[in-house]
Structure formats: C-alpha cells, structure tokens
Image 1 (cartoon, rainbow, N blue to C red):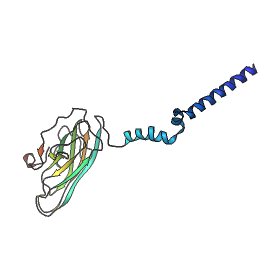
Image 2 (cartoon, rainbow, N blue to C red; image 1 turned 180 degrees about the horizontal axis):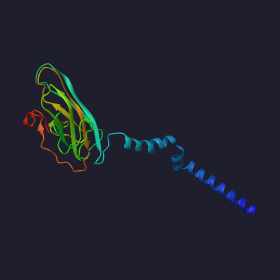
Image 3 (cartoon, rainbow, N blue to C red; image 1 turned 180 degrees about the vertical axis):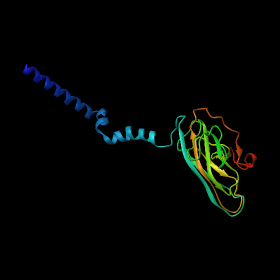
Image 4 (tube, rainbow, N blue to C red; image 1 turned 90 degrees about the vertical axis):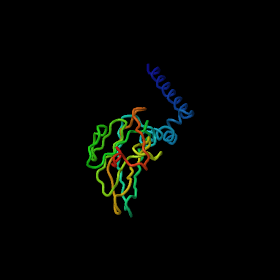
Length: 202
C-alpha cells in the first residue's frame, strides 16, 4: 500500500516537472513568465483602449466640459472663439444648442450651467455669464460652419465685441453620445452670416 502511494507521488511530481518544462520552453511559457511581453502585448493595449481618449465611444454616454472666450477688443466688432475636443470619436455629429445666459434651455438640454446635461445625440452649451459680447454660436471647426458641431468636438464663436474693452463669455457643456444615425443634422450657416434674430445660434 505504501509502495503504491509512493509511486503516485513520484508520478505526480514527474507530471508537474514535465508541464513546467513545456511552459518555459514554448511560446506559452513566455505568456506566463515574461512580464515585459505581457505588459506590452496584453495589458497596456487594453488599458489604453479603455482609459485613454481617441477611440470611438458608444452611444448614450455623457461627456462634459467647460468653455471660455475672453480678451480685450481695441475696437467694436472684434471677434473671439474657443475650441473644444471631445477626446473620443462620436458615431455621428451631435445637434448643437447654445443656451445664452438668462435664457431657458430647449427640451433636448434638460440641465443647467452647474449641472450640464444633454439628451442623446445633442450637444448643449450653457453660458454662465457674458460681458461686452455680440451674438454667439456653436460651430464646426472642420468646415467653419455655424450652428453645427462635428464628431470630434466643436467651437464657440463670438461674432464681435459690442465696444472696445474687455469681453468674455464662459460656461459649461454636455454632449450625450449619439448612436449611429440617431442625430438629425441642422442646416449649417457660414460664420460670416449673422445668427438668427441677431442673437446666439440655437
């Protein structure tokens, strides 16, 4: 009985040694024992894809940020802008809305400056305050078209200071990422055109 048990232990140890030799001596062994290989080929690419921006992002997720336009005009009519990158690539361009300070947001922008929100497929820019600014609008930075954004980000454009001196417009924004073909594009206006009604593009 003891002899049989001893042979089982020996067989088990032999099997373990054989498996160890195979793992070290084959590519499979490299996956187990090579930290550099594991980091470069398996861990880092997955971490980059999950946590670093630049890739596509699924629909229904909300991104938020801030914007600020400010400067000192030496004469009335001088213009200003700010540019924002989403960091991720949206499935399609969102429908933009600029909510001027003191105005009510549309139904697709159920948030506030302090808590910016947007419905799926929409970009909502909430102005907190302004001084000495003309009409403002969101614009597509790739085509320089007003009342439009693109898949990568957007700009906020101020058509011109009311008078010489300091001007500013600042606030927050939110975009809820669209699913493919979920957003309805608007007719774009060139930035040289005045905003509808002489006010900020909605």
